[in-house]
Length: 196
Image 1 (cartoon, rainbow, N blue to C red):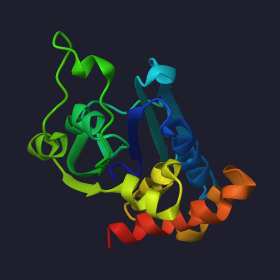
Image 2 (tube, one colour; image 1 turned 90 degrees about the vertical axis):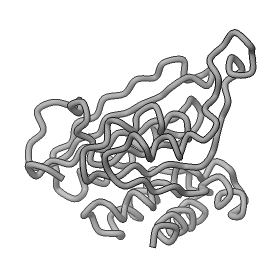
Image 3 (tube, rainbow, N blue to C red; image 1 turned 60 degrees about the vertical axis):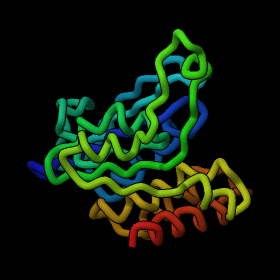
Image 4 (cartoon, one colour; image 1 turned 90 degrees about the horizontal axis):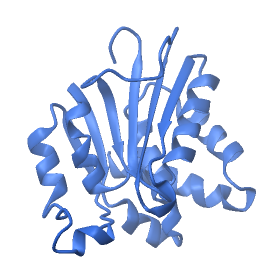
């Protein structure tokens, strides 16, 4: 983190929970006493298009947008989207990426762009920081709900930020549907354990 400012860029595709995850990060930072700003790009989110969210927090934040190449952490909910934004990680920063791949229909057409053969390996070549890959979808399926992937990744992210675990858990419990609180907290723990 530079200049007492923390920059987190979240990327994924529509339906993966990028917006909820960024809202949770913002609330966690607010509860921890920081000033917070956020910006989102929804693209064609309802059709599986790119979704990204900039989250910045610190003593005082004047702009929600992270400067190019200045992300402390890029949280990639989908492998190819993580590759697309791997260059945004600052030197010494971290790219946390799910191994999940969601190939758009156009990638299977001969005329469309081809889905990368190994997006995580390619991201490692581009990224100026550390790359941590997590089989979030597999962990979520073991927990019984594939929609838990984003919470698993938040657990992994929490190990990179200096905000206490209790604040994260209290915030998640307050922001997810009541009937899913226990599952989401288990997913959060699983994400923290995946990077230890």
